[in-house]
Each structure stands twice: as C-alpha cells, then as structure tokens.
Image (cartoon, rainbow, N blue to C red; front, side, top):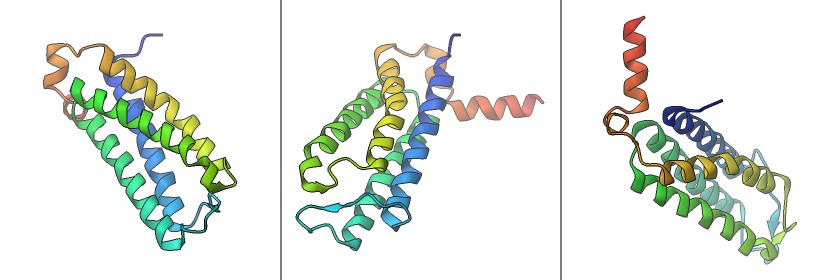
Length: 144
C-alpha cells in the first residue's frame, strides 16, 4: 500500500486534532493526569497547560490541512521531539511519573512524528505545493 503525500498530511492532521482534543480535556479537568510532585501545578495551572498544548496541536492540525511547506514540517518535527523530551524531563516532578494519558499521548504522537519526518524528508512536487489538501477536497466536491 502506498500513501500519497496528501493522505500522509491528512493522517497527521487527524492525529494532531485528536491530541489537541485530549489536551483540551486535560485542561478542563475531564481527564486527569496526576499531580505535580512539588504541588506547584494547581487547577488553574493545569487549565493553562491544557489550553496551550491543545492550541499548539490544533495549530499543527490546521497547518497540515492548509499548507505543504517543507520548512513547516521540519519545524513541526523539532517541536514534536521537544514535546517528547520535555515529557521525559519533567517526569521526576510528576506524581505518578508516567500516567495513562501522558503515555497514550506519546503513543498517539508517533504517527504524527513519522508523518512530519516523511514530509520534511521528501520534498513536495511542484503541483502539490500549489494545491492544498482543502483545495483538492473542494475540487472533488465540485466534480460530483
């Protein structure tokens, strides 16, 4: 099975949107991720964390849907690696160090990381850069 560049972007967009939703739910307190071992992450702090992380992943989903620019995917890949590193770096400050939603997010993040690595590694064809995924979807709808 061969996935097209557009399909890889679409999968990455879906994964980023799912991650954004999970982070928003964490921020709203619907999903619990434990507490800070030092006690410095209160309810407001968790809301801000969830909102910021959710918004970052939502922005990533939007960018994956609208553009096909190599520099964006390199930047996104660096950001994803930073997220992984920070999750591991702050683990000693959490109670428990590794909780279900954090591990779930890291597992869900793997396809996004792979999609961004592929998109960053393999340059887009000239026509792919001109037409975004959403443009192609609109054209397909008009043809029906």
